[in-house]
Length: 288
Ligand SMILES: Nc1ncnc2c1ncn2[C@@H]1O[C@H](COP(=O)(O)OP(=O)(O)O)[C@@H](O)[C@H]1O
Ligand SMILES: [Mg+2]
Image 1: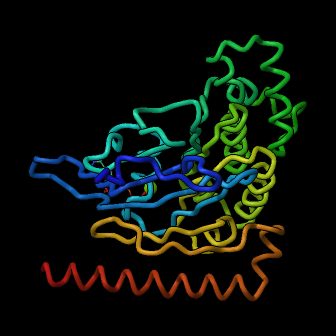
Image 2 (image 1 turned 180 degrees about the vertical axis):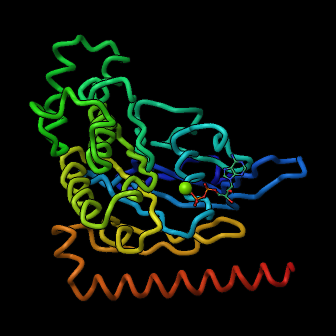
């Protein structure tokens, strides 16, 4: 009999899944006294739905392995390679970073010595796109993320607010048109109002670029608002305990947050997470 794990998962019209984890375990410091199981037997599939990249939220407490999962998709060390199991993107096993995947981190990762425009076009520059073309595209993206091309393009990162810096980070990633966008708590350091604005911006841009988004957060509200699906994670060891379908973001965040279904789903997820955390505490206690 053929081993089903050897074949990439296919969904929708036989197209390979955008992201697939099969029994993925990551042990940091394997074989050393500091050995630590970060995630254990994580399996999930994010399908390739025709003409609709999905947003998947990864929700869970600090330390449950959210960044580990995301960086395994990105192919970034030391998370990559997994200790066991298979990570596939668009049907191919991940062997390292690639142009099909773009990442936005929580901490502001712009180059301090480059202007906004030079930060946004950095990837195009690396690809050898001629200056006039990349600057024209760069100015377009500066406008798309809600910055002012005339006023903001020549600024340096230290002259920007946190929200503006994340807009630059988003522009810098999306200008390269990745199929998969990986976002690791990108709005975690922003004040609540800016955070809602950024959620709206992300939804708007995501509709335009139709990429598949993997969005890591520990905000239940953010996970439910943005996600077409929410993967709920738990600790000790890090793993996925639930996959919940949620309605796609069809209206601005502030409006959706006042709808009854939204409160119901948020409350249900809070309850679920509390249950999972209580179980983890009991395990910790029995281990002494
Ligand atoms: N490079 C590393 N070496 C050793 N342990 C790590 C490393 N990276 C993460 N960990 C541990 O693995 C667990 C999961 O980490 P991480 O994926 O960053 O979780 P999250 O993003 O959900 O907070 C944590 O307990 C963390 O301390
Ligand atoms: Mg993290």
